Image 1 (cartoon, rainbow, N blue to C red):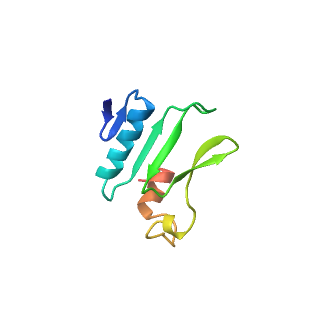
Image 2: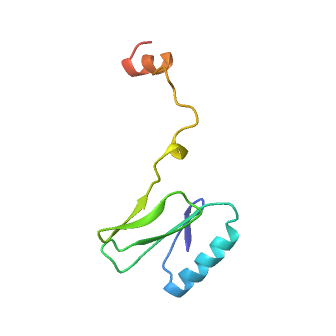
Length: 96
C-alpha cells in the first residue's frame, strides 16, 4: 500500500487481507476514528467500513451513503448571535 497523505493509504488488497488489516487497524486505533473505503461488486463499485465514527454507512435504494447524524451534537460550540463581525463585513463588501 502507498501512503498518499498522512494516514491515507491506497492499494489493491484481497478480501482476506483487507479483513485482517481491518481487524488490526481497529485494534490499534485506540480512541481514534477509522473509515475504510474499498472496491466492491455493487453499483458504486465501493463500500465503507467505519469504527467509532459519528457518520455511518446506510443503504439508500442500493446506493451506500454516509449518514450524518442531525441534532445538537453536530452544532458548533459557540454560535454567533449578532451576525457578521466588523472585519468580515469589511472583507465581504470591499471596504478598507
